[in-house]
View (cartoon, rainbow, N blue to C red):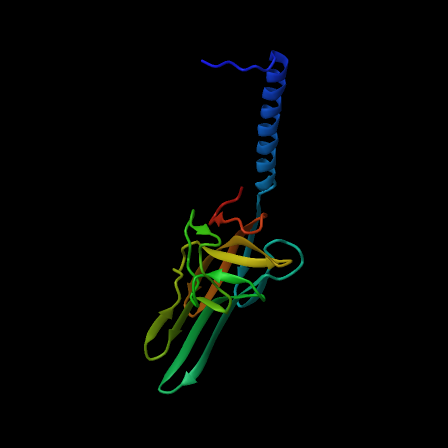
Length: 196
């Protein structure tokens, strides 16, 4: 077995240098991960009966999404048409998860870069009654659900959710917003219902 010809003091110095180099590398890796990632949650209880609510998900004074409820009727012989529609409309460059009909997410569903977001106006639930009754949209009456959201701030994409319950009584409907949240680190996913 060959032994080192370096004096003990040189070997100790070299070992200390190697350990210091490894620790410095680990420190640099730690800096690469977001240390301040946090979910910002806002509990609320807002009922939208007819009209619009402007949702500012990160509370910066800029409307990110609009939740709207419209109710009406028109005469279309031989039947009179009654209807209500609950929809969301994202502001520019924002979107709701899924297609034209936003998905009603359940607790724990991931909202992030692996999902598809629709930037146009999306119908959560629409009901029409004339000669026949029909529904469109993915949301279920009376069942709380989560709307998956993607929004832009200074060119960076953030992900969040809004919890809504749609109810109806006869020919009228309302949507109740019971809370919303977003992940404060750009590009980082959040789970539906996650509050911390």
